[in-house]
Structure formats: structure tokens, C-alpha cells
Amino acid sequence: MPESPIRKLVPYAEAAKKKGANVIHLNIGQPDIKTPQLALDAVRNNTLEVLEYSRTEGSEVYREKLAAYYAKNDIEVTSTDIIVTTGGSEALTFAMGCIGDTDDEIIIPEPFYANYNGFATANNVRVVPVVSQIEDNFALPPIEDFEKLITPRTKAILICNPGNPTGYLYSKEEIQKLAKIVKKHDLFLIADEVYREFTYDGREHYSVLQVEGLEENAIMIDSVSKRYSMCGARVGCLVSKNKEVVKTVLKFAQARLSPPTLAQLASEAALETPQSYFDEVKKEYLERRNVLIAELQKIEGVKVARPQGAFYCIAELPIDDADDFAQWLLEDFRVDNETVMVAPAAGFYATPGLGKNQIRIAYVLDKERLVRAVKILGEALKSYIG
Image 1 (tube, rainbow, N blue to C red):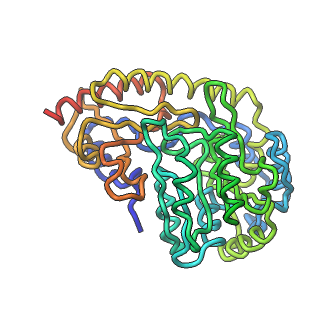
Image 2: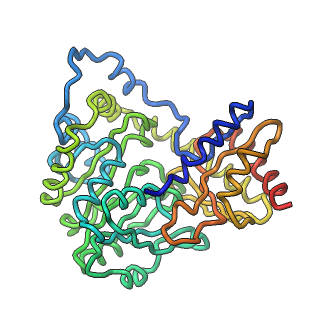
């Protein structure tokens, strides 16, 4: 089981804090945005007398409200197409277990969310990477690159849209290209769409469930974690119009009994969050992105991709080993007793050796702290290289 590049350096960060240092966290996608009050109130003011199991597939009321939410986003599904899960992580694990047997393969454009490696390992499924390039802003690799990798053991193509860790937003045309190839080879197209609300520069999100004719091939993964700043709720879902997929996923869900009851109450209430909340959050993330990119571009030798969605970016540094650099930052480097924690990007690749000089930055902090963090990063690079 691979280590998480996001969390593996936590002991070093904790040690730094115990010595009195302030650590600015750029490593983890934990938004500082407030959770909608109505979601918190749904838990605080509930009248439950027994905290019971929920239905294995999630409460019917919640799934019906989820279907209504998707309809507002031009995604036509019913409550029977939805399995509520313990976070998007469980939905991804169920999807891989459902469609893949031992040594079956899933093609994923890299860099990708690091835990895809862990989910695949847990299901004895092989990740087959196809490389996207920072020079292209991590756009979809040529379809020919996917075609070359398809074998009799290939079961699916998996994408994150908008992307973690790249922030890239796949266009409608790119999604349709992927739809065409999965239809041609009778594969599944799994789309992790948990950052759907966060798109920038006038771009719009296009879901795999909006592709006409892809009903039997599309599996969507979703979560409340980032949309409502409810990471600790651990509520996600898997959505597919393929009845056999849903029926099989339900068996996996039955083995873990049910998703969390209280968190479903919060998630159900969160669906009533007004659009103004998302407008404000999106505006804030856009400003943070612009500040972060502008500051990073001031550092000599740093190359950075421009995110079009989500709240992450990949930065390429003028060093050889970002893992060593990230640990050194926590152990040995301070500016006015402050340092920064970053996520080394090699863990977001499956191809050995790639991403060694890259880091992922999550711009989930206020603009002032982002500016401070990048200034510390710039000073650190001068010292480290020297």
C-alpha cells in the first residue's frame, strides 16, 4: 500500500510545531471556507432518539434530493441510479472493485489524485498511466496514447474533472473524445467530479453523465467534502445509469452496512445551500488562484501550470528531489520561525521517476497567507539550492 504524499510528512510538521514553529499548510485540500450553517444546524438540532443504521444505498430522501440537484446541473438521473458512500474515496474503491478483477487495468492520465494508487492496490487492480505534460497545462493526452495502452485486461479510463492535483478542466470536446474510445472498446469511463462547482475564466463543467449514448459506460464519483467544505462528513456517492453496475456496487455497500446517518442529515440539508454561497466561494478561489500564480511566477526557475478549476496547482521547482526538499522545509528551514508544508508530486504519478521536481499546492488559505507562504518558499529555494 503506497504512502500518501499529502499526509506522509505530517510527523515532521507536528515536530516543527512542538518546537514552536508556525507551519503554513499548502499540502492538503482542506478548505478554510465555512461549512454552510444549515448543514451544521441539521446535526445540532436533530431530534433522533436512536442513531440507527441508514439504508445501505443511503436514505431515500437524500438520494431523491441528490437527483434533483443533478437535474439542475443538466444531469438526468433518478434516486435508483445513486449509491451513497462513506466519502468519494469509498465510491472510487467500490467502482474499482465492481468492474475489475485481479490484474485488470485502469488507464489514468497522470499526475492524478494520489489515493487512486491506494484504491487500485486495495482491489488488486493495475493503474496504467498515460502522461500529461505541464507544458500543455496538463490537458488530455492524445487519444492515440490511450489507444496504445488498451489491452484485453483494460476495464476503464478514470479521470478527475476538474483535476486534483492539476486543476485542469476537461472540455466538452475532450470528454466526448474519451466517450468515443470507451464505447469503441466497451470500457467504463469513471469520472471523479467532486470539484464540479469550482471552474474559472468562464469555463463550464461537462459531466460524463451528460454524454448522450454513454449511459452503460459512465460512472460518476461525487462528494460533499469540497463542495460544501464538509470534508469531515465523509459522505459521497457513486452514480451510474448502468443498472448492473449499481446492483454490483450495492453488494460492496452491503458489506460495510451503511453510510453515516448524521452526516447524511447534514448533506441533505447542505443541498439547500443558496447559489450565492457558491458564487462567493468561487470568486474567493479565483482571487486566490490569481495571487498564487502571480507570486510563484516571481520565483526564478519555477514553472507553474494555470488551474482552470478545483483549488490545486502543480509547480515545477529548480531542484532534483521535492521529497527531500519538503522534509527539509519542515526540519531545517524557518523565516521568522515560520515554514511551509507542501505535497511532493512524485506520489501523484504512477510512472517511476516522474514528478520528482514538482510539488502540489492547495490554495485553500486566505490570500495574505498564500503570499507569505510563497515568499517563504522562494527564500527556501535560494537556501536549499545554495
